[in-house]
Length: 206
Image (cartoon, rainbow, N blue to C red):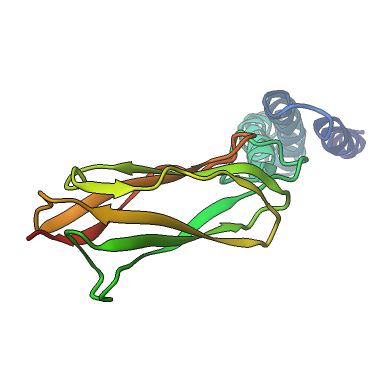
């Protein structure tokens, strides 16, 4: 009889948990695991030590079963790099790569009066198209005398597609030698942008 109950409880645990949210799954799995462990421990304890063995086995089995039941549910929940995104809906995944400076004399330094370009690549490594992607560039320390073009909206980036993006950059009088720090990130119409990240370029004043 006890063995039949264990089998039935296992079937119910697997069938019921599949249609529940994670919190409900955890409760049901813990309770069912405790019941199964209690009965299994009772059977084993009774065979080994009679009535007292049955009681002790039931107590130990109940505690162990509860832990195992809860751990099964937690282990089945996949971790996502986008925890707030519905995994059933394909989404874009944008990445900025290979930020570099292109200057007139190719010394990779922005100099006063020189016309330069900041170039970087935007990849969509997701499963859906990204729409209205706007590369945002914010000047930080050392960028006071640098002028750069305003952002241009990219209509769409399909899955697996790469876009080469260019920002016109020039330096005015007053530029100091050292380093200019920028912050860069992507905005996307449906909220699939990128976090802010920093990069720097060398500068040389005259």
